[in-house]
Image (cartoon, rainbow, N blue to C red):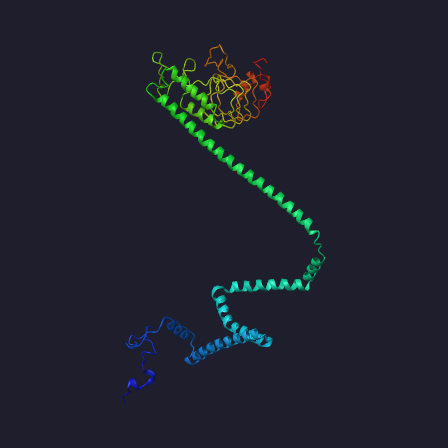
Length: 430
């Protein structure tokens, strides 16, 4: 017997109740063209009902319950208002109590949903624990008598003495305000001082750059300072003397390093006819320590100058008169101090590694003399004048340097030389 598949209810495929095998809705399940599409709110409600699996009969019951709850709340509020208007305590209190309970019935699910949505389980535990902590503290204070002690203290408090305490507090406040004002003023002064120092540094650097530019133009022109033009050399020396007197120690050291590395402080061998410097065949200018001519002669420009804690490495300061100069903690590595006058100079803590103090050997070298011609082979009259100088704590002093200082430093200088001068004669004689 042939069975009609359409007659079996178990195998009937109703497109409005089931989905196809792919999990998609049956495309034949479409609404009639004349049906009105549900609104967004209705679609949301339908989705919520579908997710909660609420049967239609139960949904109708919930809607009726919400409507009745709202009407009961309005009636309770009206009763409370009637009791307040007629000044009947029990009527107003009963209406207020019923309104309170009905309001809680509406509000509590919303609050619970808000806590569930916006607070994690851990955060909810922390909130409950914090509230319990505050309530526990309040209860402990109650049972330990803290409130009673505070109440007794307030009853025994002498309010007439509070005025004097207030005056003391006011005085302390005024003193604190004065101290704060002094601190603010000091902070403003420090900031202003730092800004002024920074501005002075910028201005000084601009001045030094302008000096460098002017000297470079003189030396690099067709008739520049490397030619035999005394007037231009005099102008360069005047500029150098002026700027060295207007900058700090770091600026002075920077200028001296520039002039030395530019060979402007070195005596150069010159053509006897045109005065032009001669090349040494190695890409530089030939030196002539006896008859050479310097572009800039320092002379006594550095006498009494403060150059402490500066960098003067590889600087040619030969034949400069630096009486009473301050070279404390100065870096003089590989500097040339031959025939330099360091009378009463302060070289405490200076680094003298490789510093040239004389030419020739230490045994035959001697300090410069005003009218004596130096001998750069034996070292006679090529050494530095170091009498009455302070050499306390000089660094990396070689044996030749120590021997020369002990021989020609005199008694005062010998007393400050690291390692002492035992066994070294005092050739200066004083």
